[in-house]
Structures are given as C-alpha cells and as structure tokens.
Image (tube, rainbow, N blue to C red; front, side, top):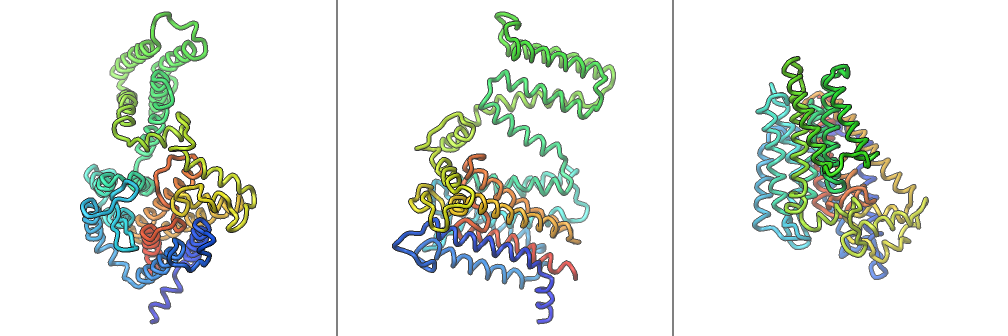
Length: 473
C-alpha cells in the first residue's frame, strides 16, 4: 500500500490530466459528429459515442493495469511481446476481416481489433531494448541493420494488409533515432527524396535534373566548406549559364538542341573536370557529390514507375488532388473538400455545440474517425482548433521533458518513441483534414473513434508514465 501511494505521488499528473482532457474532447466530438434527433442520449450504447465510452472505460482499466505492473516486465519481455504482435500481423492476413479494402482487423461481435496499432507499442519496446544494451552503437552497420529489421518487419506485413497509412507511421521512429545519434544526412536524404518525388510529378524532367544538379553542388560545398576552389566556381558558372539560357532568356539557347541533352552534356563535362581535379588534388567528398547526383537522377527516373505501378489508384488520386494536378470535388477530393468547408465555416468562434451543418447532415465521411478535427473546427471555430493544437503541443513538450529526465537508457529511448509516434499522428492527421497532406487514414490520438487506437495510445503513454514514476528508485 505504501509503495502504491509513493507511486501515485511521483506520477506526472499534469500529463495524465492532458490525457483525460483529450479523451473527453474526443468523446463529446464523436457525440456531436454522429448526433441525430432519434438518439439524443450521450449514454446510448447503440451509437458510436456510447461505444466510445466503453472503450474509454477499458482504456482507464488498461492504464491502471500498466501502473500496477513492474516496469522490468516491459524490458525483459519486450522481444517476446514483439514476436507475439508479429504473429498477429501474419495471422490477420489469413483470418482477419477486410474493412475499407484493408485486411487488418479481427472482428468479434461488436469489438474490432487492429494488430497494427499494437505493433507500434511492441516495436517501440523492442527498439528500446536493443538500443539500451551494453555496447550498442548506431555507427556500427550490424547494429543499424538490426534496427532496420525491427522496424521493417511489421511495416512489411502491414503493407501486405493494404494499410499504407499505418505502415507509414513507423517512419516516425527516425525522429527517435536522430535524437540517439543517427546522422542527419540520412534524415536529409529522406526529405530530399520526398521533395524529388513531388517535383517529379509536378515539373518537367529537365527542371528536376537541374534541381538534382544544384543539390549535389550544395552538398559538396557544405562538405568541403571552401568556395575558393576552381571546381566550385566552375560548377557554379555552368549552373548559372544553363539557368540563364533555358529559364530566363530561352531565346538565347542553342537552336535545335534539346535542353535535356544540353544539361546532361554540361553535367558530363563538369563530372569529368571534378574527377580529374579530385584525383590530382586528392580532394575528399567529390565522389560523394557525384554519387549523390547520380543517385538523385536514378531516383527521379524511378518515380513514374512507382507512381504508376506500385501505388493504388486511390493513392494516386489523393496525391494528385493534394498537389493540384487533378481536381474532383465529387470523387476522390470530396472528403478533404468537405472537411475544409466544415473547418472554414466555423469562423473564429464556431457555430456552437451540435450546431454544425456540415456535421449534422453528414457531409464529411468518416467524421468521427479520421476527420474528427473538422468537427471541432466547425463547432468551436479557430479558437477551438487552436486550443486543441496547444493541448497537443503541451503534451508533446511534456513527453520530451519526461524522456530527457530518465536515468535509464531504455526508458529514455522508449519515451522518444512515444513522442515521435504521437507527433506523427497529430501532425499528419490535422494536415490531411486541412488539405496539406494526402489522406492516409490514421486517427487523431485520443480523439478519433475506435477502441484499438485509443488502447494502443493509452498503452504507449502510461508505460512511459510508469517508467517515469519509478525513476526515483
């Protein structure tokens, strides 16, 4: 009893309070999203808000169970938990139920369970266990490959379930890895690949090649950190020459000479000069810059194949809609359009609780799940949405503080896994409801309807809070 009282005293009650506040906001928002005149009681268990209340009670019991469990269980049995979840990810492919084109659910009566949500918890624990072992180093290739395997295995099986959104969430672990010493070059490379993917869809090939060329120049300049070398000056002159002739004064360009060939010719000359100069002066990083450019060009040429042959039609439509390549407000762009209308119609103070017309008349599909944020925007306006964002940012800030004050490496790494996952869900979900990111079907933590996501987020959070509460021992 005395031990439990000490644990309660050390518990971060501010974070618990934020959790309960978000859960409450989610519950009343779900009530508002599915409210109708035939079912007015918020305790009507035949409706989604009634079922969500059951999930909330179950989540509180899960939190209590976590607080009563010894923290050593999570580190000692982390690999076993991970293996069990991997088994469920495989088993759901065989015995699962298909919902909205994704075979990722176990359905038992009124209860639906999605193993992909629990896979985030298991992967976070497994990563924390691996990276907290004595002698671990991100700089060792064998250790990095183990990390890639732990993250990649659930991603592979979730992709097989056709649940792209849940698979992409695992990319959030890169933020934790960066905190633990992962080179910023890998993060930068991924971001650059995303930029290249986007511009390859929007721009002409020659413009993309120019971007790759300038990027390789900047990479080399940054690494060598000297603009006095003739190599850098020569490369800059070639680049400016091409830019002026083909973009600013195209009439001065060489007649009957396609710009792509001109650009490739320039790059070829520069590459030869680079290599000769590098060999003679024994310069570093030139090979890296050349390989960076070559890799960028190869990646650019693969974008069309990936876009046309690997992505599903609805995924291509969502990306085209986001980038403005295509527009279909009655088809693939309907959800986002109606969501933006709902949020915009809320104005500064909103229309009031249960007064949202977009909400009341079901203009926004999946409004109680993926698009729950637009309910807040319509009924509570700019004030309500900003208040919600501030609450989330406060939670994330507190989680960073909690993670940093951990004396145990396992707890610190796990804490940053939790923060990264919640940040990804928060940022991407809100971005997709306002048209800044493609719709990938991930819930808003603690607010969206659903037992699987609420329980998984509760597990993630309260395992960290339990670790934090016992750090004083």
